[in-house]
Image (cartoon, rainbow, N blue to C red; front, side):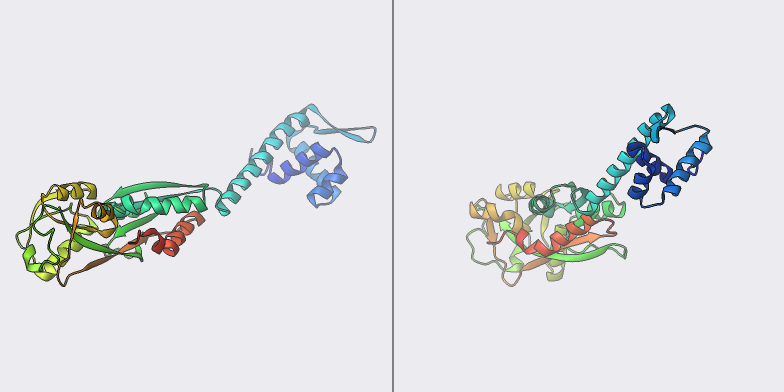
Length: 305
């Protein structure tokens, strides 16, 4: 048997006649001639050497074979309608799925707001989340494990397939514990950082990359006795006076307001960086709407003073 033996044309014509038991009415429903309907039914009967309808007293009746076939044609049409409904839901964004990868700062402190506001607008779209460092996010993007990447700082890559778009500016600030000797100072000279114990992120972190670049640019050498792979651990270590650090203003607002941490104002030095949206392909409307949502609402995501 091939697809030509029983096509959708046969299924729709037979199903309609089986429900109306009237060739003329089925022709009107299908927008074809009555002779075309009759010929389609005859095609099925000839191909399988069966009788699907009998005519008695000028009325059509289904044969046993016709009744059995109707069960399957009805199921087929229902499945096709379900398939169409499914595709319409994707097209109207009532259904969908997006996979988002974010570097640690964005993932922990910004992404929840992004997802919340996006789900409020598109409740039927599921969101799968991956949080790692910048290097891991880019790797996931290249493997198509995620659809969109959100990272801190411009990635060092020659891969032209990865498209980058700035979506938010962030400030990095120096922080220490209230017990640190910088805590009560209004300003600190850059050269005074020499020899201080610094607590920073692991290699592959976008934040670390920016800090190291700034230190190198200003010729500042610091001790780095502690490295952590998440910002919460760094904040706790700084609050215990194990050293000082540079963290996103986004993630230390609470600690600064409760005096768990103190901001260090470095004379003549402010560090800003961009958050970037990364993508390789945009396959569907859900992904496009997520990207549009982030780019259009970025200024509302950042918690202002």
